[in-house]
Each structure stands twice: as structure tokens, then as C-alpha cells.
Image 1: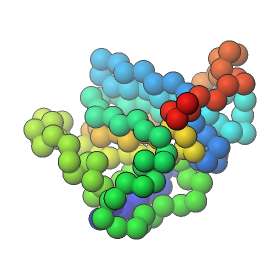
Image 2: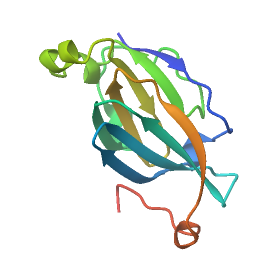
Image 3: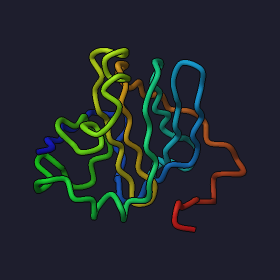
Amino acid sequence: MPKYQPISVPVPIKASKSDLVDFLWGYEGISADFIIPSDDGHLLRVEFNKPCIVRLLDEMPLSTEDDDTPNDGLVSENFAYSVLGATFSRTQSPAWKTVFTSVAHYRFITGWGCMDVLSSAAPSFTLVIRPVEDADSRRSCAS
């Protein structure tokens, strides 16, 4: 039975209008940049500085995923959550979760590209300047 707990981010993001626009897998973690719908000049960077298991997917399969229960704790238009008891977390490698202790599940929901992260690191949030060539384009996992 998944339970969602909203996470505060440094800027308001209307989740249905946001999208994942960049993802970088690093040696010891990941970073992902998301559109801030009310700010064409910046992106919200979400970073984890420890090893992760990551799932990137379109919003549609996420919204139709059978996860044993209604979406307990989801808040309309909220972008970031910690999640307890979801199928994604429960079905990952027990050995990986033993090696990387205190693993938590985080979910970032947008109108297009969504991201699940399992990590023993908490996410950090930073505003970054949006590249000029990206300012007018919105990429979708569905296209």
C-alpha cells in the first residue's frame, strides 16, 4: 500500500505543466532537470549524490500502474514526493538495498516525463539557468 508524502521544493511547480528535460547519470549519483512552468529562464535541478536505481517513464503508464491501493497522500499539482510501500521499491534487488542501507523511494511527477529514484541520499534542489536553445522546446517521452 503506497503512501505519498509531499516534499517541498524551492520554487512552486505546477506538476501537470512541467517536464523532465535533461538527465545525467554520474559515477556516484544522478541529476535531472525539470521545467519550471512559470520561469522560462531557469530549470529545477534534482540531484542525488549516492548510487541510485532510477525509473524514467511517461506519465500515462505511471497513472495506470496497479499499485494495490488508491493514491494515498497525492496532492493535486504537487511535483515531489517520498513514497512508502510502492511496487517499484518493493520489487527492486534485495541485495542492492542491503548494500546501500537506508534506501528511500522518491517520485517526481510531471505532465509528461516522471522519475522514480531509490537512493540512500536525499534529493537536493537547485535552480539552474535554462539553456537558450531549450527555452522554447518541450520534449516528451511520448514523441
